[in-house]
Length: 122
Image (tube, rainbow, N blue to C red; front, side):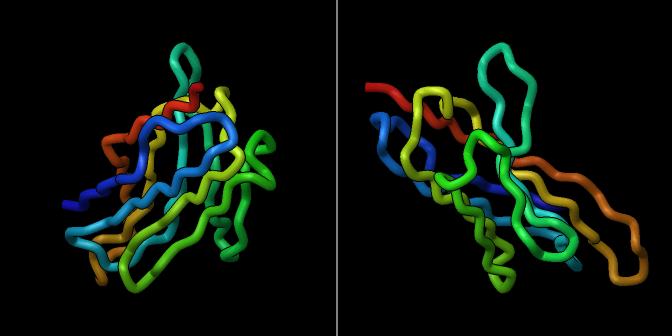
């Protein structure tokens, strides 16, 4: 089993910053994707930031220039630095990972974290 544990959410004023972390643990052979999603009340879950298969980053248009995704492969951890936060960034942020759990199988499995609330309000 694989667990994703997020941290770093909270309440911040508009224009402020937060840094989210997501650490993966458990039966991990390799992590082939590790992304951040968010879901605001009444809206569908959307991709905020992630890494392409080639290792480059991609962002939702709404966060480009403000958010930065990074990862530490040795720690199986992904980060999301969020700057210049806006009220419309308010949502539950979820970490997602696509994990290969066995060396002898190429099967990949999807895992989600429990979510961390980010609220941007004055």
